[in-house]
Amino acid sequence: MAHKDLHGGSTNWWPPSGDHVILYKANPLRFEHFDRFLESWAGVKVLDVGCGGGYTCEYLAERKALVFGTDILDESLQEARGHAVQEDLKIEYRLGTPERLPFDDREMDVVTCFDVLEHIPDKGRTLGEIERVLKPGGWLFFDTVNKTFLARLGVIWFGEILLRFVPRGTHHWSLFAGPEELKHLLEKVGFKEVDFAGIKFDLRARARNGLPVRVASNGNTAVIYFGAARKPIH
Image 1 (cartoon, rainbow, N blue to C red):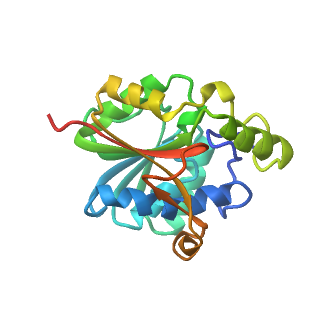
Image 2: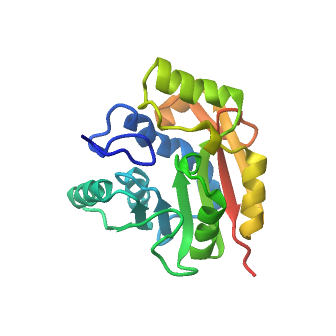
């Protein structure tokens, strides 16, 4: 029986199938927005927290970033390592939890954390760990599920119960958090610049990211939202 990871899927990551297809296709959508915060990814030291099979890690390694990934499941990391070797991508994967990252203080330029925070009970501790490993001036890029009726309807009732798009029990309503709550937690651990964005439907975007939506500062955050937070330089 396959183990379950933070993303709710099995450890069968490659080739992407089922609910993993959305996770795989989400990277162009996310980074079309997050790219505006950096001049280039070349040479940028990045840690992907909750990396799973390495979708985000490989996306950034292809853009010449220096990439590290961490996950709670060794099975996922083994598959990620194997696929990185096949693609001739240099990525370092380490076993660890979001609440205790296996990296030194002020080691990373950027931390990414996608489809993870909605599964973590102690978000403050996780965000504190991310702040710890970031260099001054470093960025955290993330997305998560909002704590709204629409999110509960779409993610849990439709996604898990009705359509069975992801396994039942993957998400827990009590662990969802809204932008204001997350902003408070981010500022509490030391982040100063916090920027949120949501989804806008745009059929023209399909040609760019494979999905008929784009991330925009004035987009809808009722179900899922995206955030960028910066660690102060001083």
